[in-house]
Length: 185
Image 1 (cartoon, rainbow, N blue to C red):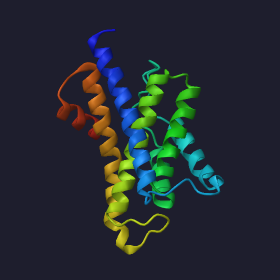
Image 2 (image 1 turned 45 degrees about the vertical axis):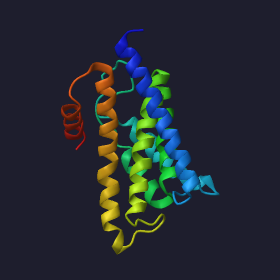
Image 3 (image 1 turned 180 degrees about the vertical axis):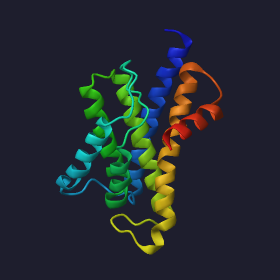
Image 4 (image 1 turned 135 degrees about the vertical axis):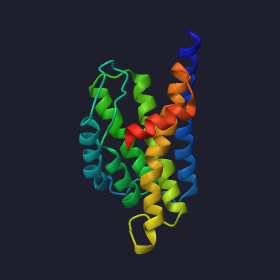
């Protein structure tokens, strides 16, 4: 295994552990929202996330799960607002596993994509709550929290992606981040 591959493997493992740790910390923290007692309430949002994840703008066909733009973020954000960060992360992970699994994407890329999307919405959902956003309600005082949620999710996702690209092929992190943010806006 070459050095670059080893770096990438450790990056995928690190992101997966980071996501699972953040989810566990959120569950312990208690303010993050839990999976609803009636999980059927999440099904419409899971369906939207799966269909949206499947509707990608471009795929290079190399089976690494990488694509230019996915529309599933709207379902993730809606779930974070309605149910909290943990259910939103669960919706993101379920959608990635379902769609990338059907596409026969390699398991390591599924783990990376699921952890990347899950981490992005989990952390931005935490930020939403820290800034005063209330799970299940949007009020006139939720404006700053809503903007932070919508802006932070793609930014965190881009930061993780840029770091992974740096681990895989090298380059300058700021340039990779700027390019990814620009591509996703």
